[in-house]
Image (cartoon, rainbow, N blue to C red; front, side, top):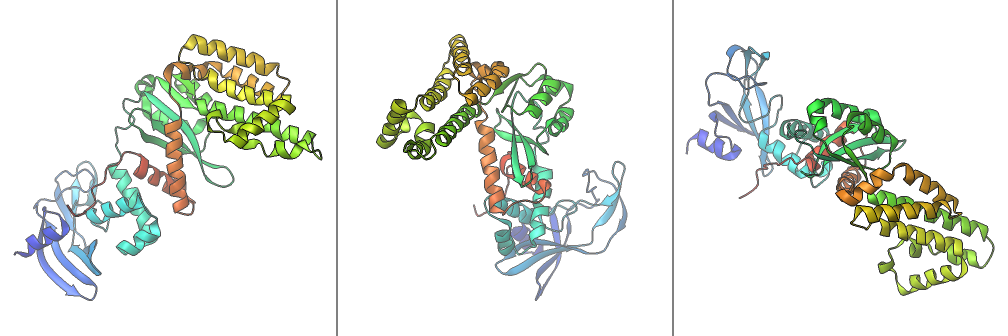
Length: 406
């Protein structure tokens, strides 16, 4: 078998020619060159005239067991009309990389499922090099047209570091993938997205799902005046659960030292769980609350009636039920629910939009949970850029082609 054929089989690259082979303590090294004669620009890929030739470089390939495999070549520089004088393109590696495509694809594939330290042991590269490879793969493989045709988007924030370090994440509901990420969680964090979309792209967005964060609401109102805002239903219900918990704590403090304080304090899960998930013991706790503490039971009924109002499929019936709930909460004489009723009244249209559209932020929260798993696996991230690269690698719809056995 010819040397070129052996090299092509081992590297999986047909567009190269092997000219020599050397074996030493450092491993196996093939001297190679591209199959094409006229050099191609490393930036745009166009053919150009040779400017000069640099020194020899080595590209690291996948190891043969414990034996390192390298490719050796002295790349030419191309005088490109578009890019200027740049190093030529080689078929076995990305421009600017000292690793072959197969090795980088395998590293990115492993990074989707395991931590960087494990990858360094499996592949035999530096810890920081793993992050560099991930950024290079994401820059090349991330869909450049992902912002085209956006119709329904979901917006949420992710806390990646203490002291209020946030990442804003934007998800395409239709394609079910992350399309944008930026530092911060205010209106400024979305400015880059809307600028990149342009006037035509912004006009195509029909719905935006989010929580009631004022920064996101302001940015969407300014840049997407024709888009319908849908507030996340489960965020609204969580606000009601928080208000109920506030009432429970207030009742516990009011009864401090008495016999009733202990069992009210231990009734949290019975009050917050769905009625159909209650255990017999929790059912008995609710019955005791109904008989002995009218204020706390009223708060429980308010929490449950809000959920039932949002269950309606008919917009008219949902609006009537929601208006009735707002009136009841306002006169409930429970400060937590009076405050909540004022908040929900200000955002009534966005809350009721869920009834017709049936969109929630569940898909965004799912990606946030995956991002939290990635951050925990890495024992945290100090850099937002590194976290964004991992986010797009795992949740941006990137399809990898690692060199796996067929």
